[in-house]
Length: 92
Image (cartoon, rainbow, N blue to C red; front, side, top):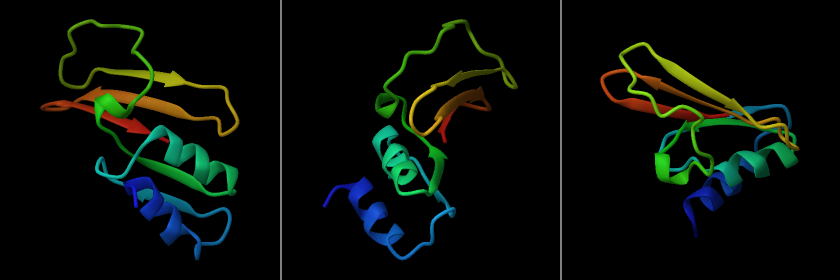
């Protein structure tokens, strides 16, 4: 069973309209899309190699800088990247 499949299995008992948070071990774009199709919301930190979009700016980021991307699709997904001590990416 894949990591997103584990989350989907556990989410079967969660009512529609619920918000499910995951860490980078489980979060993928397809997981957030699947949760959206079932009327649930998903957010989580994400590994860069699982984020299927390239950031518009490739500038050197200092602590506190951020970039964001909003996808106008079925689930109205957005992604945010900010710089803490390391780069952090979040999908929701």
